[in-house]
Amino acid sequence: MKLRNSTLAAPALGAVCLGIATTGLGIAPAQATAIQGSCEGGHVQFMSETPIGMEAEQVKARLDGDLHTCQGTPTEEVGWSTDFVGEASCLGVKGQLDAILHWAGGETSRMTGPFTLNGYMAPATNTLQIVEGPGTGGTVVITTGPIEKAGGSVTTCIDGPLKNVGMPVTGATFA
Image (cartoon, one colour):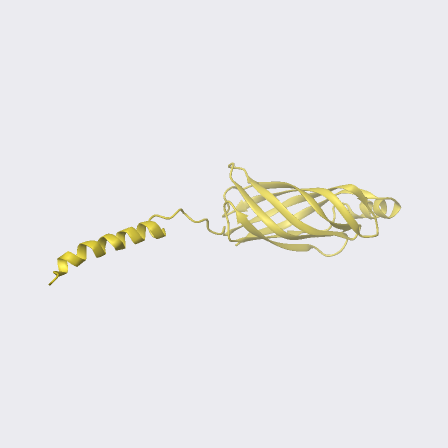
């Protein structure tokens, strides 16, 4: 028995089309891409439930922040607020950050990673992963300056426990 090429071609073509449809090689959902931009400044506020002193200890706190004068990002301003568990003293704060960025246009991105605020020492630079929303797969590097009004806060921290400190954000870069 002889088979013609055209007799074999139709079932083969059907199998290929079915294979494409069932393996997801057809239309795929759009993938988020990293943001390529920066922000000139901002602010971070650390508000601890547990007073902090000269000795490092575990704390539960609220960490609020904002970035402004942004370029190449979904909006010119973005803010975040999150619960924070880590170690803190008058000399700094260390812990894991898991926060939602709230873009002024209503979109949200989630950033995660180790986060440090250096008390009265050098500025801190934190590289966080963007794991959801605009910028997924990219990073944001946030640099903070020293505690605002450090002279008053140092005295306050040495004389008695401190619960609330603010720091300027000196820049942020999205990549």
